[in-house]
Amino acid sequence: MTALARTDTSLFGAWWWTVDRWILAAVGLLIAIGALMALAASPAVAARIDLDSYHFVKRQFAFLGLGAMIIVGVSFLSPVGVRRLAILGGLVALAMTVLTLIVGAEIKGATRWLHMTGFSLQPSEFVKPTFAVVVAWLLSRRQFDEQFPGFAVTTALYVVVVGVLLLQPDVGMAFVVSAVWGTQMFVAGLSVVLVAGIAAAFIGAGVGAYFIFDHVRGRIDRFLDPSGEEGYQVGRALDAFGNGGILGRGPGEGRIKEILPDAHADFILAVAGEEFGLIACLAIVALFLFVVLRGINRAVQMDDLFALFAATGLVVQFGLQAVINMASSVNLIPPKGMTLPFISYGGSSTLALAIGIGMLLALTRQRPAGGGWR
Image (cartoon, rainbow, N blue to C red; front, side):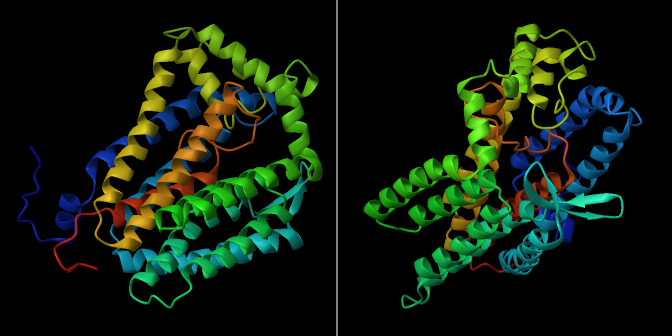
């Protein structure tokens, strides 16, 4: 029985009875799983590269703890507060992403990181949630001013953001942003013909990326020929799933993590599959699916178009990132290098995802009639 009464008018009491506690609980479970998997996968990776065994564990615990606080803190915001955070945060994130093109270090043919004292930041991760919310705000303005060119302005913003991402280049991130933007435009009422045209343009851009970007071509070639040298990680990940079977080999008993370079990051699901088995992996999939479906369900109940468009974009981004990571781990799509939300190692990704989930919780809170707490 909760100690908070529904009549509690304190700030925390009002938050507790209006926030979606089911989404909050599901994300909390994902964070707990992320902490467990950090303990399972990271020490072997750290030892292999001559770091302290708990180097990645300690850092990921710090990221997850800070992420949890960000989720709760941002979820206290009103829709107006979410919009302001997205506009300001989006401008800063986009400016810092541009800065990576000037001073960022090149890693594997891409300049996506800003290196600070003891910490590396990937600003483009923070572009994703803020972009979704800013697009939602621009599209929703048409509800109050039919003369406002919402579709045109959001299209211009999309071109700028994707253009910067492709200059890094980060084709995978550009794809996620494109999918979010396209979905929001469709929900906002863009005609089916134009939606089909956008889809065709995305397909054409994907084909073009294969011929323009060497790393994209390498990943697709590796996917088509997994027996080649570049398919090493995917091959070992598939071995891990096979070794784990239904129930897994047991905590700490996995062996693939000792030779898999990205066992703590992009291929952490393979470690979960080997040590905890198919049932555990299906439970992780179910948690992501629950957050997506619950988020969509709450979004469609919103009377505020801004909340509807923003929640839709945030849910699509969250779900698509999880799908890309899991699908590449089992060789259903070419590997992208995208983290599994709150489970893979990565500070920038974890904190950006926390901001996005916090915004989703804030926007889907049950608001009094007339939007009194906005």
